Length: 356
Ligand SMILES: Cc1ncc(COP(=O)(O)O)c(C=O)c1O
Image (cartoon, rainbow, N blue to C red):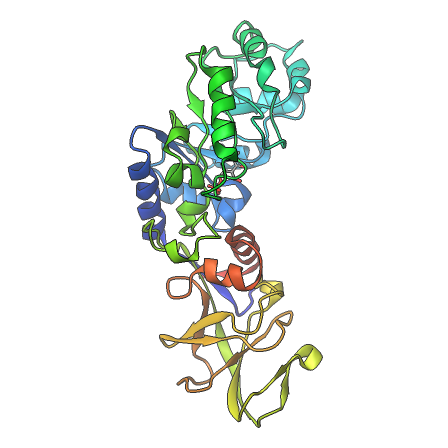
């Protein structure tokens, strides 16, 4: 189904952003996180662009299967690991590396004969989402090392929950917990997400896992001033045509709920993009857009497939393309005005819109 709103992916920006991750952590190898359809950018498309990555990370076995069957030879880490024995058969056949995050997953390795599977043992150092208890690290690592169905090249990993908050000491506590339970083990280690890569060098270790920064968005949503500090480039533009222009008088209402009243006589444009296309319904009046290299802003509530924008002192005509986010309006700014995060916006638009 084709709709008017469209998403354009910028391959050069993706490559540039991967280089920024590698520059920030020069001694580490990089697993490009391309789960959830590469945050809406298209998993296979992004994997084909980011061949300079040392490997990829995806959420689940079906994503890994699609990726491997597309022909990539790169290492693939499956962040949620396996859920049953048939996942193990697939992982063994396709040479995937599975995250082991719970003791319950171990039983599936028994009573089968397979090529030994590569694994990464995930330790819960404080995120409390997935991972084994730190005090179980040594015993489980030894058990895995001696298991005939598991490749002895075992990685150790953890995930940071607050690395995007630069003043938050919780990251230091997580890093210290990881260090204490893994220091005696000579296994390759993986800790850093984008925020870790950019701001917490102690988290770099052997394998970094950049996600959001590859797509050109800052992981530090609370530090608005620093948006360009990390030299990231937008990898996705969301745009849609202007389909109507109206002249309204001071006091006339716009859109559902009549929540916006024109503060003066003004021109208003209607853009063919709404929450069905992944534009956030909670974007407030004043959310920036760009039209013909001029910054304008939304007025009134976002509808299912339309947004109203102020064209006061803006030169535009019906048919002109409006950038909702991309190279001129950062997705981070839009996310801020919608009280959400760029991750959500990119996934929603990327998975709902027509591709250019
Ligand atoms: C385990 C794991 N590692 C790395 C990442 C990448 O994180 P980010 O997109 O913040 O760089 C994610 C994303 O949520 C993740 O779940």
